[in-house]
Image 1 (cartoon, one colour):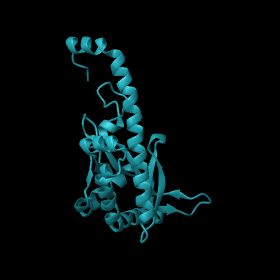
Image 2 (image 1 turned 90 degrees about the vertical axis):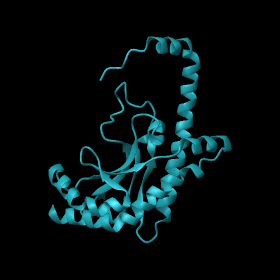
Image 3 (image 1 turned 90 degrees about the horizontal axis):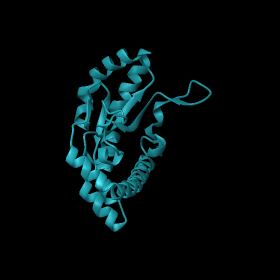
Image 4 (image 1 turned 60 degrees about the horizontal axis):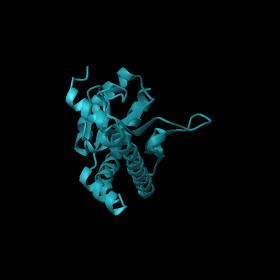
Length: 207
């Protein structure tokens, strides 16, 4: 897909190139601060799950914001591996490398561009065709918890923060309140854990 011509806008951008570069550098700093709070929120949520413990890695900018119930660990090998996990990732069709893709994960998180962020479920139990068929059989039971199958048949749940609340958090020096929608999504995932685990265990039995 080509970028539409906009000569007047392009000229205006070039007239203000230095200011835009400075603003973008600052925005990347803000983005990392917001995602540090996202990491901390997921970490705190995992620690709070006592009845069905979760664990994972919470470092979004190291490509490692992943988490899973401990019951999803595969202990048959000497080194523990995980049969399935959730990961904070770009939505379907967004590779992050097209000129028309959003430049920032923060833009996706607030849904102010064309992309979005989701918690997507990845598994390594079944081959892709069998897994997609398995997902379809369980999708209706997971829909009440906010889960959906995306355009490529990937199970996910949407994540979105409010831009205005984040802006106020920046002014206050505290993004905690802005994480409310994230905590709500995590609680939905926790509520769905029994159904999710039934789906994972059923896939294990098929393998």
